[in-house]
Image (cartoon, rainbow, N blue to C red; front, side, top):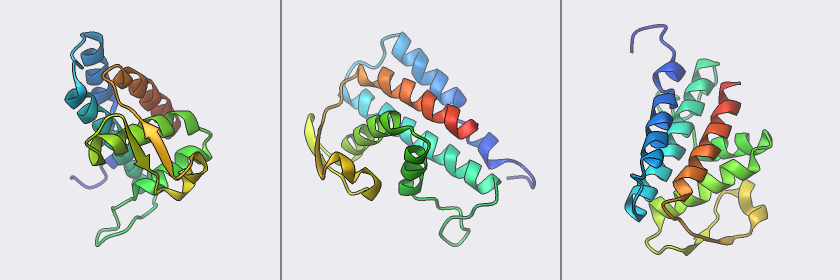
Length: 146
């Protein structure tokens, strides 16, 4: 990346969110595979953007280049901003999408900041949940941008 370029501008999820919105609007999220992939991608697009904002502000993460920011820090930050509902909705479905085969299933909560929900939570993921996750993603993004 050229010197002085903002990582946040390079990783802005705006276009991706508009793409997901278009897919939802056109009824293209037709099955569980699409729902799983879009939910996971929404979560990680936000995480990467949040991490890039951290980097641009001078914070450093882990790893050889100090550019690895754990998702637990992202989740905790969103909770500290009062964004419990959107981060919990998208996070639990992202965990189901990436780590479990059954749907619905019982997700084991490892994230300490979310243990107030319980250690095991029943979670389901339907294609229509992508629209709800998109709304949650926009709410989270508004807070990250601010």
